[in-house]
Length: 154
Image 1: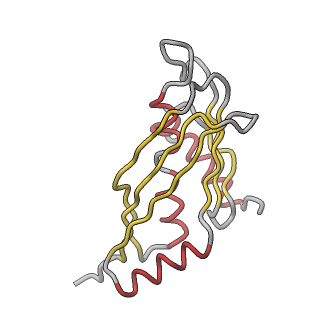
Image 2: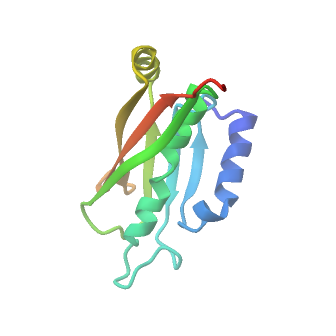
């Protein structure tokens, strides 16, 4: 699915946002319905650690906000989404550009909405892999997200 003009502008704005820019990574694609986002994390002077590989903080920072923002955009304004927990497992050192693809399918989205018709909140765990050009996994990040319906104003 191609990017829309709105997601193109969102991608540019996100890449210029200082907190994300500081990770050294770049969002390279946002699907028009926010169901897929791709990022690229190059090995550079900004991301290189003491031993010459990609700093673990850059790996985590590159993926940290993505699932939360995807769900906020996909669910719409009637929902609250917060990061609740995260873990990262380093598989091998990043010595070249790493990439990650985040995706949330419509069935998952509908399951969240269905859960929230009978419950006040729910949680979901999403995992993403940072891979090199050959598809070799260098790190796996799991994000636990808290999702709830917004309260009606009193």
